[in-house]
Length: 81
Image 1: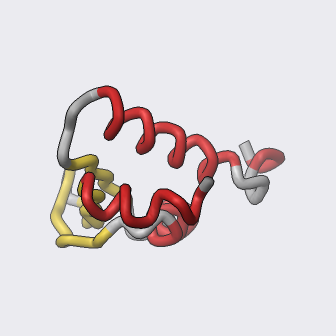
Image 2: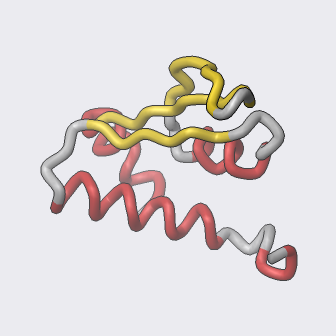
């Protein structure tokens, strides 16, 4: 929905999801898969300091695989508060 693009909603909701996931789900890793053409989503993940780990094919289309670890999140968390 283009009228909502560029307002920071993806960034804010991603921060909330990461924070809640690491604090309440007792997980050490949160991952994201993004199609190469989805530059906006890749930019959000990069701003949040996700690490791009690899590229892979899904349904014959290339995708990027990103990961955020608990340790990296809590080191960077204060940047987003």
